Image (cartoon, rainbow, N blue to C red; front, side, top):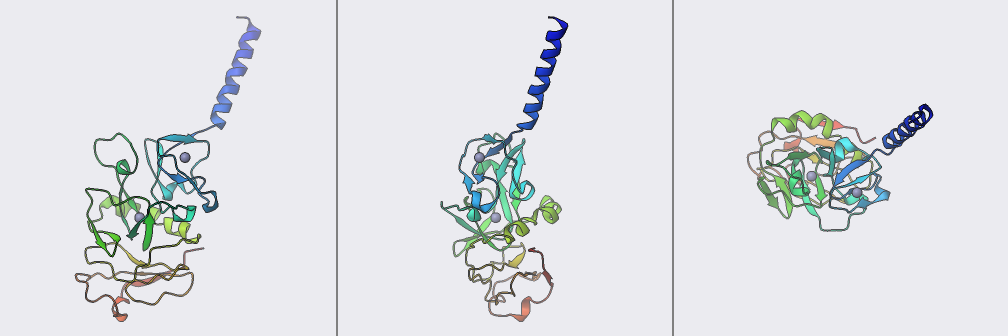
Length: 236
Ligand SMILES: [Zn+2]
Ligand SMILES: [Zn+2]
């Protein structure tokens, strides 16, 4: 090959390399938001596939396994119309139950959605949940990984707080087996937890009740929930 041809080949290879870099592809498995903007809806492909678009809010709406993005959030704001399961608060999600990935042990991640929310998936088998009026509550212990990731992943609530998200109506106190955060989330629909009145607009009140060993003190006793209470103004 002549010197000139080699130079041409080198240029061609550089161009191929450049376009490959530009056309970076992102691997997804299972249903996921098309872009991450609610108006852009959902991609319903279940099998592993690629897109040239990077996932928006990747660090809170998705979990990854071998560079495959798996959406674990509430699909409601993206126009989801399929079967829904109602949950309250933080709970485990098992990626290999959601999508078909080849693993030897369960890949357990945690959903950090506060308060009542929906998922397209049922609670994973092998994890402890209690149901109260068709709402799933995680009844197990939260492991160290959950606590470690909490400050970062709980920001999913800030993302969803900017959207108009219909939520399950939960008008009762969580069962005593639930040890997660009890958080009242202010939305347009009438959502009440344990009979307490909704907080002022655009404000979330975090209520932790550490001596929650039975159900009877919840409900209509407003004063009892005031301790360990602090306010967040974080939706903007
Ligand atoms: Zn897709
Ligand atoms: Zn959830």
